[in-house]
Length: 508
Ligand code: ME8
Image 1 (cartoon, rainbow, N blue to C red):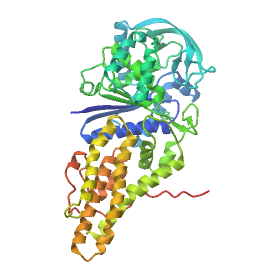
Image 2: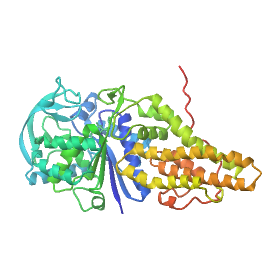
Image 3: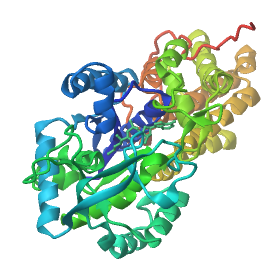
Image 4: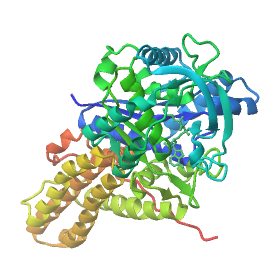
């Protein structure tokens, strides 16, 4: 059986969730739901990154101990996942006992293999990014991300990252799909080709982290501990658990492009050093910006996703996030764009089509799925387009092209809208000729078959609204497999009601 392990980054607890975080979580959820519908065995992991200096500082500012603060904030983040209807299987926290064990064992393996040595780190550190910054990369006294830097000088353990330049290049050469999109892959490869410096992997000036085994006074650099979460959740250090055997390395790590280097350089090197296989795919999406500036907790220019959800509904917001911006590219958030998209794609294209067809059937075709007559070439063409979605959508999901996934479904919905206008079932109804009535039934049947396909394929993106459409179509089997069996005629339908209301914008 196909296995898919889908992960979001674990989020820092230095603030509350904004639209950017919701974006990654929703994308991961869409992927998880899609693969489940194909019949694959799926594990979807998300959670929180409880450690590090940034989080300790946030706790301090809140006047709480790091433990109490992270206990409180972690719930807020978990609620975010629930509010966006993320179907996660595991919500992990890096303060869990099992995670300490995993991170410490990984460390011990690396140490035993000779990849860790003790020295002194003297250099720049960007607290906001929890990242070491090279002197050469500092622009106007700041990290390339714009984050302020501070000088850090402390005894530290180092990981021999430099030893992994060739193994990483060989790995990426042999696995061209391991990093997406292609532009990011090229960036990572040229970064590795530029030479890798050993990485400081412990901090000794504060203690909010996983203790370094056997070396009191040191805690792990937060990224080392954080990355390990992906295998903690599978049972590591036990590599013989059912989950580990099934899901490692069948992973798709989703994240924003800000943290691709940690995932595509450090993480595979750490795994290789510990004798484990690198993740199968690392997929980086772009940034949501607000007036062209990256939305960020630390910058404070964030869009509140919950306000949007309260105003427009969860599924419409999920759809907008997935459809509006090609996954991998940046997108500037604007409420008019959101409203435009919801009115055109949801209220007009899918909503109207469904409502028109179902209420017509309710009034004029005995409120049940009509029995079709002979199909015309136009009918066959439209039915074939719906049936062919299967392969197209599979290809889209294989590369996490969520925008294309939606676009392809909506192309067929557009065809169905053109078809209904051309076939005019309302005129056929008025005719005295019984052949026209049969034709009307055929047209309605074809339309309902297309709506069934669209709703079933759109489930990963809008689980609840598509559920309502499928209820109105009286469809119990909502699997992709079920689409291989043609829509059954003669089934009674409940009274329809509109699923996607039009958003009226009041002029101020
Ligand atoms: O980096 N647009 O956590 P984090 C799109 N703890 N996505 C955005 C975004 C934006 N403006 N802002 C944030 C960390 N994100 C580490 C991860 S993983 C082992 C450790 C999303 O709380 C995006 O997915 O800073 C980004 O990668 C993530 O939030 C960063 O979350």
